[in-house]
Image (cartoon, rainbow, N blue to C red; front, side, top):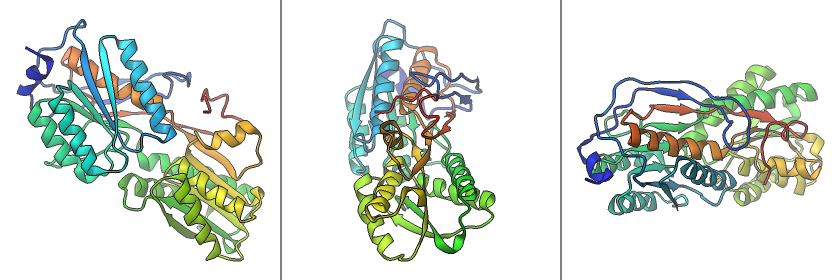
Length: 348
């Protein structure tokens, strides 16, 4: 009986566990964490000598974070042994994601990790994989199943990440001595994406808590890419003449870096820009080059760790029969031009 056939008898994954791990795998050098679990689905585990096939479906696979995530997934597969990982990039196309899920089933995948382009397809993803008896995890972006329960999830809580960014931005704002009268906050994000909305909520709430005030917010809607952030921020700057200082926050490093670059192109001094990114994989390039940049800090998230963790929880489940943890949460660290190297990150 194949691994896939054995799992035909399993319904939705009955995991009720929480696993916490640190951003230490691959390069960060930080420490590990703990796990607990309850309930499990009975199934004959795979032998260590059986090759397991994991399909890893990503959105925007050309972005640096997701490139790193793929690298981490493949490295973890090699370390575990007898694990094959197939990476599939669906861009931002939800229909392509559903097609990729169906293809994974047809090709006999033993497990699926998926970064959904839109959480709205979560119920359909779950139905397809549950019917096929294939275990799965939501990588990076959480989603709910048809019954309202959450799919097993590997990432960092978006609200918490936003709060960390907002806290740092607020601290830098206070230290700069700026006031709300001549300052604007640029919030650059994909406005219809739930995780971006959560990050923005955390950013603005924490900024206000630290700064004691909130300058007017200029929301820049993008597709979470640098070119779009660059072009759309230019229009926002034109519409806000006379602003002296700018705080830039966003859903990812692409957005923040694009907006910071747009401000630079418009003649705004780096001293008048506080950009706090989310990812650090683009912001660090300015720091590495010694460039005087508006990218003042960024929350370092190692995509390799999320990729590795997604593969590991699936393989552990397949080989031991233990339930997949309901959540596998990572930690992130705030870095800047003086601290990014000490964090262990490999810029570029």
